[in-house]
Length: 148
Image 1: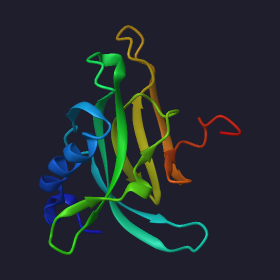
Image 2: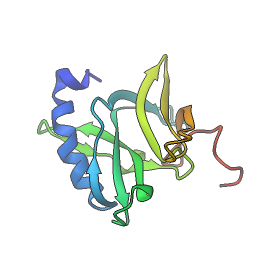
Image 3: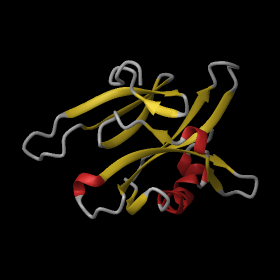
């Protein structure tokens, strides 16, 4: 997958994601430089899916309160017409990830993140982890409760 800046994906992604986020809530925002190329490998078939992964924030339920704003991860794929589209099967975010994820990056072949577990400014609780796909959701296997 080409670099998001070079391919033009970085300029197209915010509008596509804002439209998608409208189904989840209000007050869309997308941090700068949070679009990364990543290849998801389907465990059952070993089929590779080259995608762009993006972070965006939305006020779930349009509550209007900072505590309702949550980070989501969306997978984008180039369309034949030169645009981008959201791949729903790779765009579900686990509720067990930190409420705010500020950075998404690839390290070796691993997709990693940094974020903030608490919204309390006096105790920001930085958090980092490795993401993987499980059942259509982006999870951090170290944080997921057993049996969920």
